[in-house]
Length: 396
Ligand SMILES: *Cc1c(COP(=O)(O)O)cnc(C)c1O
Image (cartoon, rainbow, N blue to C red; front, top):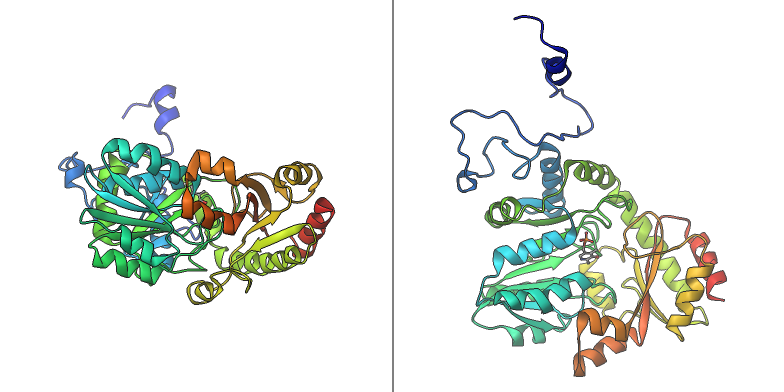
């Protein structure tokens, strides 16, 4: 062949050597598409888990490695990653709930998920009943003939209330429904929802699994048939899948998950004990403290307390301003599960209006946990002595 032009060489030169070398660390595969046989079908309907790689919205080697790793940690057959935790939750709802179906949804949990189930799902003709899933009888009482999915969060954001996964799974399966568990606050090191009967385990990878505060992502882990239909129906057709670069960052973060979670938990216990003894703190909610109202359940369902604490003070708004000004190590910011400690305040009236919309007994129950509002503290991997000292000088 004649010598190729500079223009063509600038695109193709060097490609004769294959990139697929047996590297030890996972390579970052950024390709959008892959060489395929001319006989390969173009339709998503013909794709399954064994189809050759074709286009990265369907499957990508770096993302697939992360999916296999999460499935292995959660003891499920398969997993699918999304661009964010919210994309994973709405993907699950899109695939499992259709017009006329019924969802039983935790009444307290991730704000975005609550707002979606209050505002968007009913517009699509899906019935939603919000219940306090820490009371299994309330879940059972909400079951209808058209109930398809029960979605719980444990420990729940932001008040760390727990749901008994085994008991919730029994109610779901009796009703012919699936149980999905948002296990973001726990991570697979703390709780194994699938082993306790959950059908689908969901995580915001943005939090503990990524662990370094630098990559958004989400995942659903579950049985092969459920994940395959979500991949086809939502991954391909809605398209909010994870980028290979974020998958690569999250794979790197996950390698130290088993070292980080015990460290987060040990530090959080020390900080929770410190806060419990502090004169300006009126209540501390932490699953690793015997003062947690569901301490027995925490002991059976959680291998350790994880790194999240909720605490109350006398005058929330004034203290929020004070902490934001005075804290030196702990960042005043949302998100969680980061190596850095993060704190944020959530006022009860405000969250009721925007996200939770509870009334009557359910609101009373929330107030028993959270009063007029709480600080949500994500205890990072700094020295717990330094964190207590930072809180002490800021709360004074
Ligand atoms: C952060 C979070 C989500 C949403 O995840 P994103 O990655 O921010 O979209 C869902 N559930 C819980 C419990 C979370 O903390």
